[in-house]
Length: 509
Image 1 (cartoon, rainbow, N blue to C red):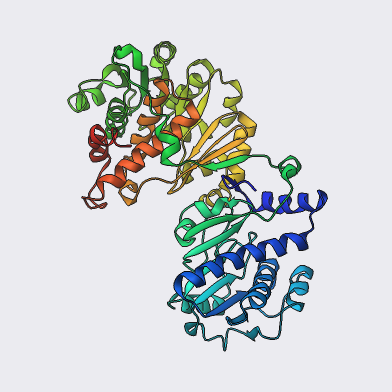
Image 2 (cartoon, one colour; image 1 turned 45 degrees about the vertical axis):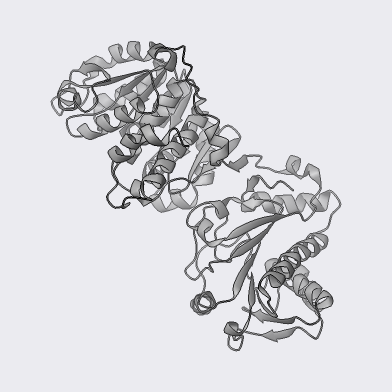
């Protein structure tokens, strides 16, 4: 068992197959899973004084886990009223059929037409397993919505049915469970929004897969969720014996006449998260507009082309400035033109310092992504779902549902870091992936991405590992937004409000 590791559905399936190869059968795993679920239900029954229990069982092995649990509870708690609702008919897998055949006569059988769910104290969801994706059939969705309105304590077996354990999407009607008993490891989708809000208190139970299972996985990506306790200790230490050069120099190549605010927001975010020197390189007209907004910046005024974008003639100077810096950020508000596409390509080929590419930098890179093969530095890409779709040459819906596979493919192909931004963000690098879930709806506004890019650039300039800068940046921004929205409306809180609050929240994070 690895309670800290997050597994994809494919990894979990291969872990079970590895168990068989290592001498522990699937029948044994099902027996162990049923026993773990029975223990949680028994404890819950004692806590709330429950006397009746309804299992919702599907036709596959998740239903089989429920059958084992029902049998064990009937044997050990004969006074307990136990019913099983076969939501889609009798079991279809051999394992589930075998478990079903061992049920004692005391267990009552029913279906969705006569289950009477409102009469039970506890309802156990054992319908679908880790392979579920998509939507329920209409009658099952309606039935589960009715279940959701009952006052019963709802306990999920492995995960609430309806959760896509790869991407965290949920089917219409997915139960909001009070508790989830998951087996061996948490599943990736369970910690991603919106699914994480439906799992309740999650317990990881050992089903005794032999220890060397990880060696038999095709995909050995180690995925973990990072929490505040993990990230707080990554904050740069500020010695009292220091000067501005002690905390790094960030070159931020951002802004255009069409996107002035992006340059202002990212540079101010970098300043307010500890970077010693923030050099904003932007068209002259942009700097003239925002210099009063962030007077602490060093400014490098650039020539612009006829459309207000950074001129191609400035590329050699920017490369020189980049290699004199501790870290480089490009993309926020630079717009899309021939000159900015060449700028991004030349930075990739010639910069030797950590490089963060965001926003229009990503859009320009997507037009010639193979240029990443010519890189001379560590690169972090920070796409939202739409930008990720462009990088992968696919549509937004596919990028959202398949972002794990898409990001892993890009990381393996180009040896870059990808910080995939969403309500739950995932940072992919080498053979690892870190999930961070901080923030609230205050961040669902223009400027949030520019703010995050500035924070990541600031942290990287201060010497924080680039992949961890992405995670720590998510934490700083997201947690500050959460703190602000305890007192103010999320609808009203903006990126600049959050940046202004860093002076208070950084001491408390």
